[in-house]
Image (cartoon, rainbow, N blue to C red):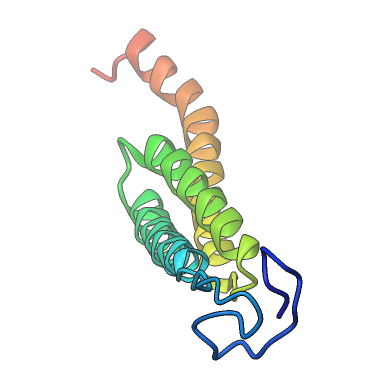
Length: 125
């Protein structure tokens, strides 16, 4: 490792340059901390995406909205985990579940809406 002041090469374990006695700055663990934080956030978003994805399939009234939230969290988790080269399977699974929930309830709304309107117009006596 070269000295910042005089350029002399020395071992990384040294606390100062052997030539000019300039103290060596120790590298901080900032990249490791930010990497750990990104991992925690990515896993949190991915797991939240799975939970919301399952909820979007089972909750009739708000399934469409929860599906969108699931897809959003899945994409956020995917991006965080992908940026630090970690497995993205949970994020992808959450995106898939959210998409299924969203499509399912949109499909049901579209195809059940005409029958609901018809029953309102012509109530059974």
